[in-house]
Picture (cartoon, rainbow, N blue to C red):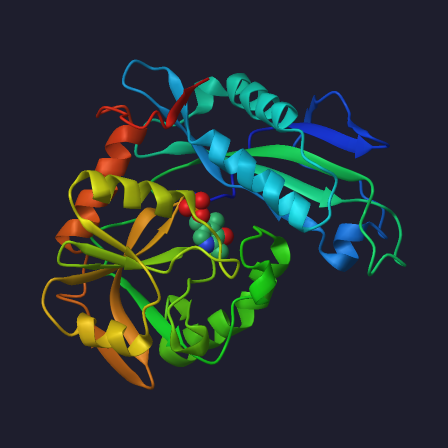
Length: 331
Ligand SMILES: *Cc1c(COP(=O)(O)O)cnc(C)c1O
């Protein structure tokens, strides 16, 4: 099976911002675009993206999961990067048109169609280090994906990093390319030195998030996770899981959690941890690594509450359960 995100549908919807408006979206080949080498994005990282999924339902129809939230965040990322303003109606239409064109290619569960809206500045102007790009491009890439996540494998090995940062704190809630470049070196070092899968950035000694996912501690019926602030990405999966957990009667504590508290809780029975994001929904954490010591959570595999929450979310996405919060959009 091809690696996640390496297979693309042959065409994509594209639109260009110039003057004061977005061009009429077109479907074009998805294997190339033409950019001036001086394009703003290539020098000053004026770029953001989104990630959402379309799911095949038992009756064969296709539904999009919480698309409005992704479009809101896309518009917010664009605004915070001083990119041209997203017209939400245009982006919505581009997503719908693209997915409709490839509706027959949407895999059945556990697969899905991963949708990657992308927006970046294209002014050919290398003198604009401190000025926004006034022209930009947005497109909607589609990538059919299989099951991201193998739950028979053990949980992830997570390095707790109290000295590094994923990105500059004022950029945390922007889904922008530069933030991933910024996180890559600490992640590579953690892989090499500790055979860690991911780094949980803990600036100032408090758990924040990993390179591309939010962090949840699931301790005996209570979920503890950092409250929303500017410093990290506000995951739609995080919000969905907290909502489902509340529906199930679990306690939700959105607050700071120190590394010390994390390790203390992790050493007791019934404590689980997971990473949340669109790709995997919830990926279980098996081991924390901190100051050259390892702390295994339970048996190091997926815990029962992590599994239950992921299943509840998948059941809604896959049309196997009621959708009480109206998260699914008709195509
Ligand atoms: C995309 C992303 C997430 C998860 O967001 P979802 O909306 O749940 O997919 C979390 N953290 C970072 C840094 C991300 O890029």
